[in-house]
Length: 448
Image (cartoon, rainbow, N blue to C red; front, top):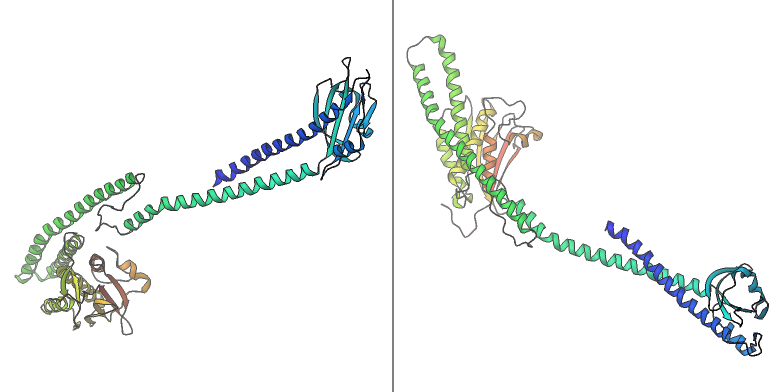
């Protein structure tokens, strides 16, 4: 639009000048025709130039609906032969024209602006009579205003039409980009499928560039997942063996003074083994080959986790309970069990001694299927909860030896299933409630 705003006024001025010039030339031709008519009335038969204009012809020469018309015929010596003698004021002697000459000009007579046409008429002996016809500028000014209005209106209409056409063209041209943007919004490291929306051929190279970028990102993400899985797998066995050896060493006769050292070693090995397991869980959560559309019931997953935790030693005074209801959903049982394991482990680690932890599950038509782990520990401040779900990040004032991966893994698994993890206030006065929500299974699908 900026070039349009610059070019249109220039074109409008040029058009106005051209049309105004043509109109001026047409009106000047009318004056010249009147002057030629007067020149034709000069009589040279007596040897001396003479002219006789009747009253009727005088009226015809002066007739104009808008302007006043004046005329004057001068002999070669400058004597007035016929017409308005006042016109001699605008024709000094040096401006007399030779026979056949003509000119047009704007003159001022007694405070009035006039347009003047002057001809040189051969009056014998090489001398020239001067014929002048002038008129006021009323119709010229009116025509000038009409031309200016027409050009301005034409330019405005043209600008509006061009702006409308440009807007329509840009909108139509960008419509495929809108579709591409929507496709791009649905892509992440877990979903790097090629873009397939139909596009104009001008945008096909852009789409191809995006698809090549997705392919490179996919290879890089796959390499990272494989590295995490391989590293975690390779670390788990030696760490488990090292933990067993430390525990056996603590049972063998030894100097009691090394007990604190052995216990610290055991705790660090346990923490390392837990970290290796979590890294492996991350790799599995990001594995796109895992089918998350299996028919499951979150109640079965919670029951299995409860049986597993029943054989573990909990910190002193920790009460782990379950309130379970049917919760049919679509997902991957192992990944969801891993998510629940991390949520329970997180609650046990941070709620503190004597904590009360409750695992719940259920479903609703509006809220879908859900798993929930609630504790009455110190909780996490609302402002810190988004940070706590990031990898290797822990809330301010967090205690224990956690790595900051438990909530992040649960959140990734929830996202992988098309759900979400929310950190909410507990139902009691204090504590934290971690709620993992999933889309409910269709009514036509029975759970197993």
